[in-house]
Each structure stands twice: as structure tokens, then as C-alpha cells.
Image (cartoon, one colour):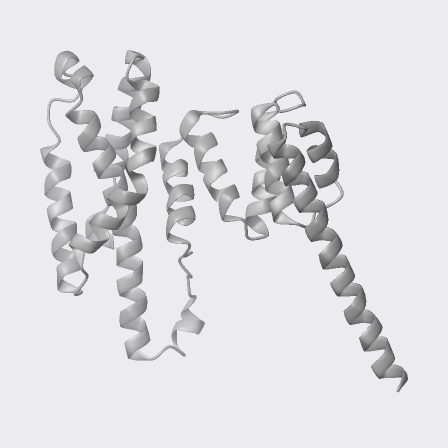
Length: 248
């Protein structure tokens, strides 16, 4: 009987804690939307195990809303929220990497964060002992998923390169004369996926939809800055040039 009562009390406590946490977050959002950022920040500091509140704190410090902008603190909050399962935090980390907020612009890192945010799937790596217990069908499926994940990363960077290559600034300045090497590498990658019965057109369509807004933002950001444009187009080209298709 005493065990039953203890469990009942424990369940009631958990429900009370959850409702309190939910109420605090909702209050914080209401204050945030009303531009009462200081109050929203104060409410969320009491909920440091709620990834929604932690992500909101990151947004507040990233944009300097009611507080002094602090990119380092914002990134710490986003990383913690991401660890607890926040997909919004993945997006915010990608945005910081893309815009170079508190860090150098890192297209590689931004692409990975945005892919995680959009696809909502993390590639699960298996060690050799775990692989021994996987059936042949599952091994084929795992290999195919791994290929698609790698193709997604490659193609995301490829469409960035293609748009930058065809842009007015590159045509005028002739920063990158051609991308034939990368185009040939993409064809080779396509062949690998076709052999593994992957639907390339569907994969490409999804990536284009997911990346459209980010690429537009990237172009806007660098279109008027020649040095930044040169660095960006060179960085993306090098990423694709060094990508080893033969080892996938």
C-alpha cells in the first residue's frame, strides 16, 4: 500500500512539474512576443532543462533583445538545446555558421546543421561488433541511407557552387572559370546512387526545397562584397573538389 501511495505522489509531482514548466515557457513566449524580452529571459532562466526555453535564451542573446548581444553565450545555449533535442537550435547554429556570427563563416558546418534541421534524421554509425548482428537486408538499407546522406551533403554544396558560378559577379570578375571537374564528380555520384536504386530526382527536389531560402540569403549576404564572394565560392569549390567519391 505504501509503495502504491509513493508512486502516486511521484506521478503527481511529475505532472505538476511538467505543467509548471509548460506554463513558464508559455509565459516566456507571451512576453517575448510582446517585446518584454527582459521578463522572457528571466522566466526562461528558471527552466534550464527545457530545450524550448534554452533555445529562446539563445535567440535573445543572439539578437541582443533586452540584453547585450553575446554570440558566445547564444551558441552555448543553442548547443545545450540541441543536445536536449531542439531542432530549432540546429537551425540557429547553422545560421550563426552561415553568417559568421561570433565565428568565421563556415559553410561546411552550416550545411550540416541545416541538413539535420531539415531532414530530422541523424546518421547512426555502427561499430564492427554491432554490424555483426545486423541482417543482410539491414546492411543494404544502412549502406543506402549512408549514401543518400553523403549525396545530400555533396549536392547541397553543389547547388551553392552552381548558383555562385552563374552569378553576375563571377561572370564579370571570372573568379571561377569553370566547374567541369565538380560536374563530372556529380555524374559519378549519380551513377553510384542509381546502382543502389535511389530516387535521385526526389532527393534533389527535396534538397532544392530545403536549401532555397538559405542559398538566397547567402547570395544577398555576399553579392556586394567581392572579397567575401571570392572566399565563399573558393571554399565551396574546395569542399567539393576534395570530396572522395571513390571511397563512399
